[in-house]
Image (tube, rainbow, N blue to C red; front, side):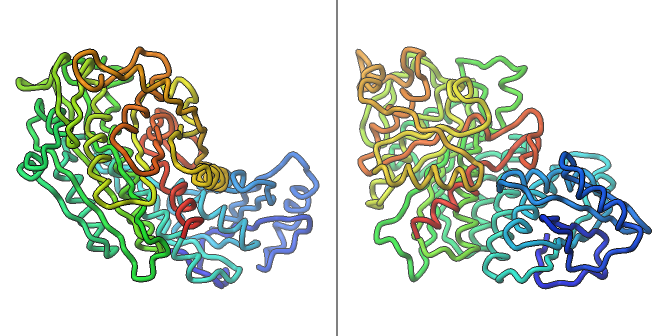
Length: 465
């Protein structure tokens, strides 16, 4: 999709006018619209007017009080316009035009790879044009954000039959070549040499090998002396292992268990396309979790990358096992901050549902404040949970250093405390289990993989840069 600025409404099929207190569009309108528009302006309850006239599509939207309402109007616009429309022209102020375009563009996503009639179902939209002058940098940022979110959604929506750990790593490698960031893929033999016991144990039941992908984006004029390390859980499919999940409503959506990996890789992809002046490292441990003949079992004692021993009480708590190795590995980069993202616990979903992500950690409060600001700006909101050391006590094993699950209470916090054990640097844990994959559409977030967290982290990183 292309975004263009300072255009004139002539060849585009759809005209969208943002209506303020006065109806003063820059574009000359057909006389037949005047009466409808006057009535629309006087109706305080009416926010959206769609008029198809002589092969053109005219839409009038009243300026909204909040950024999010403009994005939602963008979603409504996508629903109103025929899928055959190839271009639209937005006539309005800079800020609201961009927000409307963002909501519209994100609503334009479709996952049609496995649809027989994909060509007929596909949206034809190719460009969104603006009447107001918008800088190339802002256009580039919007373009990069949409591209990164769409890529992440594709990854999350792809079933394991089309996306194993190796294929995930290769997809990241392709984006690295495109956006000019480095990608190093460690295969099983190297992972074994590094003694990443958590990743290797989860992989034991799989027919496919694991991967450990190291991403680096280091611009010449980076503002940070120490890198920000982004760690993403890459469980490309999760059966629960020998602690088997039920199928309906659980295992059937577990292709999405690598949404943390998609979020972190997508964030670096977007940052590189935008040329943000900030040094980033990405770490993606990836495997599926299956109950194969050699699968790891409850009762096993696993020695992790840093030498910590973990007693496995539940093989469905596999995400923290692979993240722990990656978090310990992150210390070699001497980071300013380590952030991980994972669809880690059902407890997170039960606590706050799909409307936000949970954050917790031991990093300086300024990072949490910036994340919260970014969350409100992008409406990828976050809720900070306590991170008291009392919760760590639940993770202590009688026969090893740690258990891989706690008592069952405050499960998202005990999982975070387990992971904190492996990080010496300032740390933030993000549990994105709620918003990462939706069983029904939520405005411009759509159905299925949402690409959650990319817009949030880009906003956060811009504040740091």
